Length: 155
Image 1: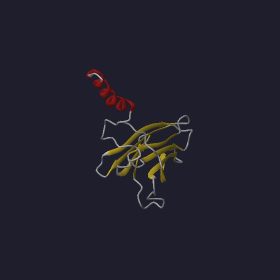
Image 2: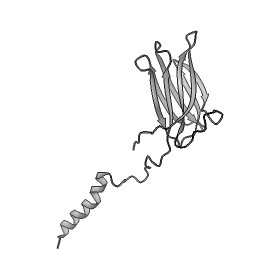
Image 3: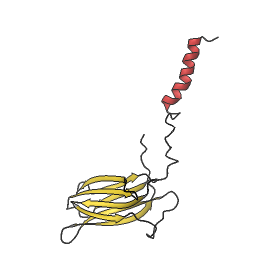
């Protein structure tokens, strides 16, 4: 017959090992990646790679809360940042892009775009092209698109 200390050891191993091995999620508020919808995404490209541009992108929801914010220094050595994500549960409304101090504001693309709404497991995202006008001032082009991009899970 096993001793009391042996039973205590076995009980602690039965409870402790699965948690350590990751079999049991002790944070029950976390949602698995398979339950999360695909995220929205932002891709930024530098059109004229002979230029260097300091770019910031801020996306806000209808209440003015920031749902995405990122700064970039784009150049020939770093001409793109692709598929930066933010949660699909947010409702983006406004995009503010600042290029070398010049600010551009656009609406988040909606149903008026022919390729939207996205179907199945795809989420809407935007491509931003940072360009140079003939007079040397920065310009932007914005395209809406659908694709499936998985967010990295963080706890």
